[in-house]
Length: 197
Image (cartoon, rainbow, N blue to C red; front, side, top):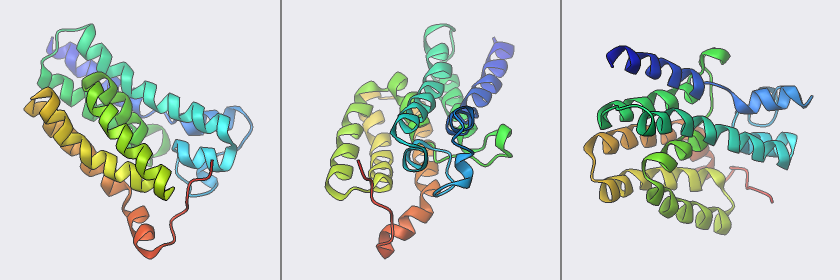
C-alpha cells in the first residue's frame, strides 16, 4: 500500500502539472498563452487572449485534472483520509509548480475546484454562490477567487468534520491567496482588469 500511495502521490503531481491552457492554445494555433495578456496559464487569461471557447476548455481541463487523482484515491483504492488529503495537495502543487513549465504555473483556482468537487461538493456549492455573486457585482474574477478560496476551509470543516481535509484546504487556500498577491495589489490600487462577458 505504501508503494501504491507513493506512486499515486507522484502521479497526482504530474497530472496536476499538465498545463491545460498552454496545451490548448498551442494545439489550436493561438500561440503560447504565457506570452499574452497577464502571462498566466489559467482560464481567465486564456479567455481574454484566445477567446471564450478556449477559455472554457482550459477551465474544464484544469478542473478535470483536480478531479482525477482525488476520485481515484477516494473511490478506487483504500487510502486513509490523511493520504487522500496529501494527494489533493500534490495535485494542487502540480498546477502551481509544473515540472513541464520549469515550475512556473497558474494560481490553482480551477484545479482546487476539481479537488473540492470530490472531497466536499457542498462546500463548492456555497463557495460558488459567493464567487458568482462577487464577480457579478464587481466584475473582478480575482476578488471572487480570493474570497471563495478563503471561505472553503471553514465550509469543509463544518460540512465534512475532518481535520486532515481542513489542513489541506487551509494550505490550498493560503496558496491561492498568495498566488493572487499581485491581483490584490491591483485591486487596492484600482487597476485590476474587470471581467467582460
